[in-house]
Image 1 (spheres, rainbow, N blue to C red):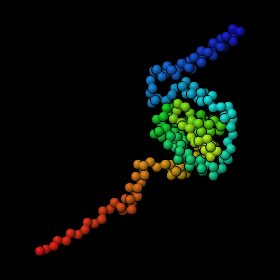
Image 2 (image 1 turned 30 degrees about the vertical axis):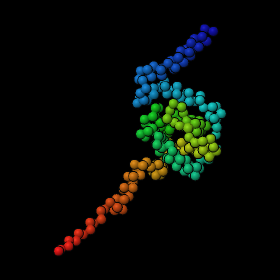
Image 3 (image 1 turned 90 degrees about the horizontal axis):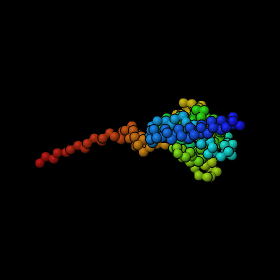
Image 4 (image 1 turned 45 degrees about the vertical axis):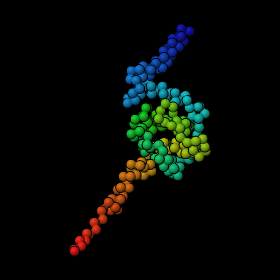
Length: 206
């Protein structure tokens, strides 16, 4: 009985430390988002995310096949919708992804790859509260299919080739500034910037 009491005391103390540590860290550095989350905060956040995903959703299986057509569609979707934060390679090394809190994860690492297909699908579809990850798509069969396809592509991220990344760079959305720059470059190459020769002036003598 005394042993059970000590175990309960240790467990309670551990829970208190886990709960209080992020609060102390917040008080210490305020709302600064430049430093990455500490180990305790990251551990608690991951556990809360795990608990927040329903058990049934975690055990869901991917209905989409892993074939070239599905991966191609998913690659295009990822490049168009996800790469601005996660990067084409999924490592999160982008201006937006690097300035989120927490930063966009490196999805090629085990922390993401160990998640079940059901967990990845749930995160894509519903987002994650208190992070930069939004919910994507409406509750339709078409959007669900796109999310499951993205799960297939996330599994491929650690194995992308230079040819894959080159293809994705052509699929990325173009900002207005980039579009303007491209147009100006095209006009320059076509000779549109060359000024036409000035008309000759005729002097009329009296």
